[in-house]
Length: 415
Image (tube, rainbow, N blue to C red; front, side, top):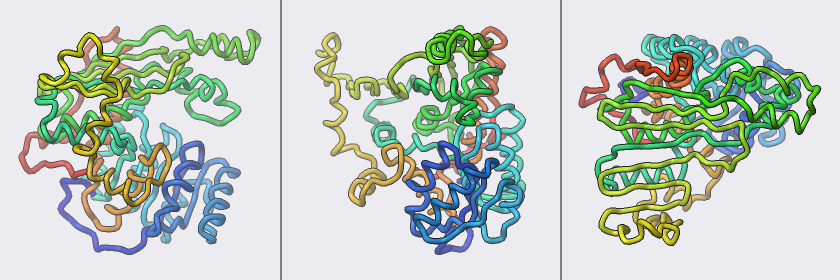
């Protein structure tokens, strides 16, 4: 249930969950973030591949001592009366159809991240939610990253002044994952062969959107995207699989580096970078810049006007100074998490995002990352594809709140 829904469900003690998708993501979430929650019962599992579905059931049996129902078709799982909620961790293209069907079936929805194939499916998500009022949450775990939440806390306390510009992205060497898509049955392969877009926009757009109050007093207006040529996978496959392998000389559509610039109603700009098919270190490139200072993820540093100006040409000495601010600005969520014991994958982010979903599903509280967030953030993929095809021409970003973002009572649920 999102921040705009005033209907509150009765408090429950147990959430009966069906997990849909047991590939790389689902097989990480289930043992590390879902099953450790005492209030969760995994009563059903599903995957289109029988071996994966059976492996999911075996994991539940191993860790909980019970055997869930096993399905190969998500529609059969949605018809199971022993399922209250679903967690969708299937392929990108399956997220929206499953989420729509789940809302229609009255199953509370948690959907993993990825970009939208079309703008229409984003509108479908919004309209289906508004008609069914079935609660839905977008599982953008990076919104719960320790540094992202600490910076959000700093922004809300005014440390950086008025925020003017933000940067972020997904900078992750995925050459092996894409190239071995056939062997590993991974969906990314087909996307990289046939599409050129910002295909994974939400890891830093999510935290940035929370900082800029997107959909709640501010919104994204337009974007412009450009893509580099596609050379990285050719070079990688020539080395790994040889010149005679068919994909070595495939006509890869996905550019190695995609840069997307977004303009907001409040005047702020956002730059997102997708960089996944060249050799590099992992980074989400989180960068926040305001009238009183800035934060830079790459060197874990805070620059404050009137405090650090003398070091502006010798900034290396300040690298890592973020830790000096933790005691004062650590987000309350992470203070509690550190005290109780960090659990879940990706440094605890998975535990926090799944935990938030379960608490809201049980209590009927508003989902902290709601359907309007989901639609707006996912739409960047389809819109970037259109902009790239037009040589970087600006493309309008729809207002999925239908004008309600300006209303003073249209407030986001707190993370």
